[in-house]
Length: 225
Ligand SMILES: NC(=O)c1ccc[n+]([C@@H]2O[C@H](COP(=O)([O-])OP(=O)(O)OC[C@H]3O[C@@H](n4cnc5c(N)ncnc54)[C@H](OP(=O)(O)O)[C@@H]3O)[C@@H](O)[C@H]2O)c1
Image 1 (cartoon, rainbow, N blue to C red):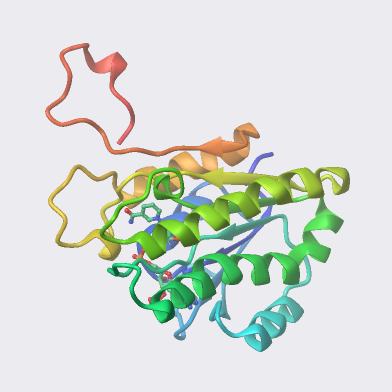
Image 2 (image 1 turned 135 degrees about the vertical axis):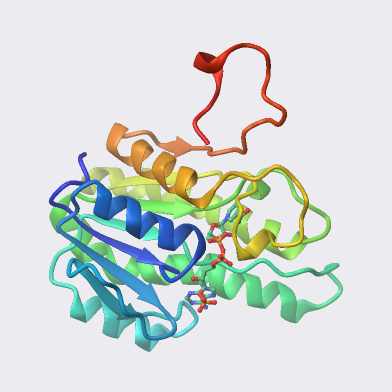
């Protein structure tokens, strides 16, 4: 599916990968982008409609769904990543509330519109859904749950003509990973890879950072970063 002339909703649209997804959707000629944020957002492009959307607030999710008339692509992007050591149940619950139940709740609220359009759901999961990082185990657990949700929804929604796309992202240079001196992909390159994957109809995309220093294989072999 081409993003041009479509209607897209991005959660966590005010910074990081979400902000880059809004910019990339605009670049591809989207008709309208609903930018889901917790705080008020002003955007210079008239195609961007702000939507107040805290993933932990079911009433706000429902109110947001009632403001949207039509939707082709839902991008569940918002997420949290906090340090823990699995000793505190509240940390697990906080991660699950946003990364798992938030994704589930927004998906359920917008499913009637996506069914009508035979649209696409994109869940920005993480490579940590597959390989846990012991510094942030609650995050990994919540992302593993979100990935499992993604796989089940893909099977369950296929009969309605709704596609479900998983993004298994490696480290990205955003506020989330500030302070980590590791190779990271830019938010812009990840957003581009995600929407390329949606347009190509892929089930999964896995944007990962470019290796540094560059391999000697030559420019043609380099990934886009
Ligand atoms: N950065 C990475 O290395 C990386 C790697 C793999 C996957 N990811 C995933 O990519 C997604 C975006 O991450 P990012 O790197 O762009 O992070 P980020 O810069 O920290 O941005 C996180 C976004 O999520 C929003 N958010 C947090 N809690 C929310 C809630 N309860 N309701 C609604 N919005 C909420 C934030 O809004 P506020 O500004 O209001 O806090 C912000 O817009 C996340 O799901 C993350 O897990 C990131």
